[in-house]
Amino acid sequence: MVENRPWANLIAHIVLISGVALVAFPVYVAIIASTHSLSGLLQGTLPLLPGGHGIENYTRMWQSGVSNAGAPPAAQMLWNSFIMAMAITVGKLSISLLSAFAIVYFRFRFRMFFFWIIFVTLMLPVEVRIIPTFQVAADLKMLNSFAGLSIPLIASATATFLFRQFFMTIPEEMLEAARVDGAGPLKFFKDILMPLSVTNIAALFVIMFIYGWNQYLWPLIITTDPDYYTIVMGIQRMTSEENPQWQLVMAAVVMAALPPVLVILFMQRLFVKGLTETEK
Amino acid sequence: MQTKRMTYPGRFLPYALLAPQVIVTLIFFIWPAGQALYQSLLREDAFGLKTTFVGLENFARLFRDGSYLNSLSVTAVFAIGTTLLSMTVALLMASTVNRMIRSRTTYTTLLVWPYAIAPALAGVLWWFIFNPSIGIVPYMLEMVGYRWNHRNSGSDAMLLVIFAAAWKQISYNFLFFLAGLQSIPQSLIEAASIDGASPTKRFWTIIFPLLTPTTFFLLVVNVVYAMFDTFAIIHATTAGGPAQATNILVYKVYADGFVGLNLGSSAAQSVILMVIVVALTMIQFRFIERRVNY
Image 1 (cartoon, rainbow over the protein chains, first blue to last red):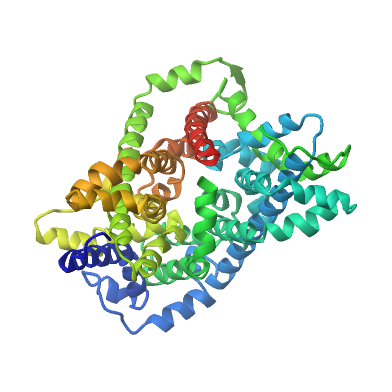
Image 2 (image 1 turned 120 degrees about the vertical axis):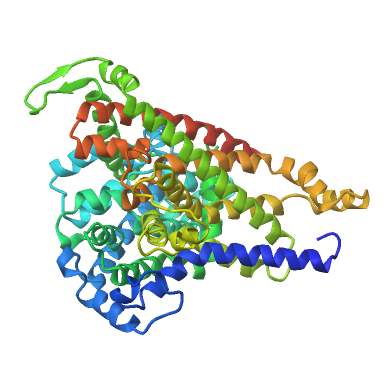
């Protein structure tokens, strides 16, 4: 800052602290609610201090779930979410790396045609073409399977474009040197391109893991078998009951939010890099 | 499109490398999008036995349909409300954090994590806080004489979904505003303050104009977010109600197609949404290219 004004700094801190409090408030309420009994929550107003039923609620949610709502135990839903998120992330990253490599380092017939096929998928979300996509998945017998949960969501081009942008910035001399040394395309890809892309891959990994973990509409329509419920959509099934078991719902919300939040907190630098480069 | 000067020759390899991406795209993207286009030109009778080709009739019907026009205006209110709210808060936070030196990283970390929370969970959280019977905010509003009930009041329901959607987006806007602020040369601001410009004046005459590209970019991204990525928030809270008050376009596609089984109309709505999102993406992409090229 240009000039030093103690009172201005104080106001700035107050603004920021209230901002942080506002942002954190819903989650604070969820954590508090997950430590009370249902009757404690229904007594009129929501308590703002933790209660004594936390361990009980989390154990119950983790092990047995809300069985009358047909929601499986949280442990299983979290596992399903994890498999789905990992499949989407790894799938997207690998097909994007390969296709970006082909587009940047080869000259072949219909290259522009393929480029445009991939380009049109950029950002068109699954929500707007949901019914025909569902029909395709149903025709391919992919309902209630991990393949159905993940493969249709792999079809998006963002990562391809990022890798393309990044490959374009790698100096030509790298390729020249590799070719002089007699390295074929696959060797060049494996020994030079991949090691140079490690940070980009990791940054995208963070973004895509969160994207996959947080999917909602697609798992909601593609799975009817509780064995394949993911935690984010499972919570919706629990709240759409007549009298939701709020304390268990909130325990599940906390467990569902924890993995992606932890990923961001530990990988903040990579996350920011991935995010700003995705959109820049 | 630019290419490298030097490339590998290859007859089959490039196609093999592209195959996985292209196959997945064709099956789960191009084909469904084509189906939506095709279905938007058909009309199915109530039992699904007969389909007739009706041309653009489905589109014409939509624009005569009061509930679709309502959904258009609901979407506009929702998108504008969400965008304004989240961008204002984010800009306030970013410009305040930017003047901090030692505490900058701590505040950034504390403001960034809501990005990781699923829209559906954001919906459930805010729905719980605003729950008319046990929620904490209606209780406080009662004390100042306001009876909050998003189950009956359309405007209350709209506020609820705007809060949830904006809350989720603050961290994203914050990061971009912060990055934008940090790229403004410090010397400009120092020169202005030597000339005696107050912090407020410096913000409006120097900092804000230099942030215009970031602001414009975020405007487009936020409108895209509010229009397309908020399905989960609507579904998990109000389900478009009460009385269609929060039935945004992307939710209506789902409701008309999956619940109402009106495939022709739903497909026509999909097509309109695709056109909108492609247009918005083009704007965004032009901006991206400009940024990358300098």
